[in-house]
Image (cartoon, rainbow, N blue to C red):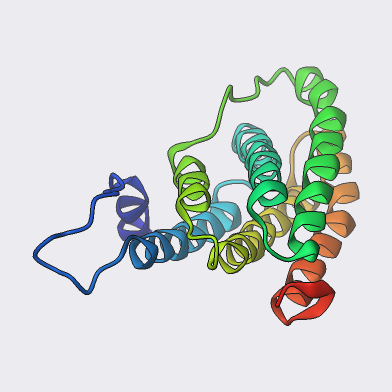
Length: 194
């Protein structure tokens, strides 16, 4: 876990290494996204399930990331299925955020004001993706992000200590599972992603 946390905290280097012509920014970004996915899954599985503070932080940041990434997908996506999925992410995660706000306040918690460094790095990687690679980068991130969100919501729904947020997490699980199923269908070539 410490190694994963360390990897997630490392600064991004967007400049290519002139001494290593075989390393491209796309390869570096893909490696960072893969590391981020592992860190996120570990965090969701260990930090969020019973701690309301950790749950609120992770749920809110997850929604902010989905909304931002969805906006980028609508503009940069090549396949109509990717553009449509991005639009759905903006709508669904905006609705989820709106539903959670009063519950977060009722639990006496404060939502984080912006993305964490890990999700900022993922957004940076989407923005930096070459047009021909964008759909794959976006769908790979969405697969990892929805697996993480599903783990977080299921864990809190089962073992969370705030009844209102636990109920909201339980209600979010089927929607997140549907998103994950849709991402996997797009990755498999359905809905015009390839």
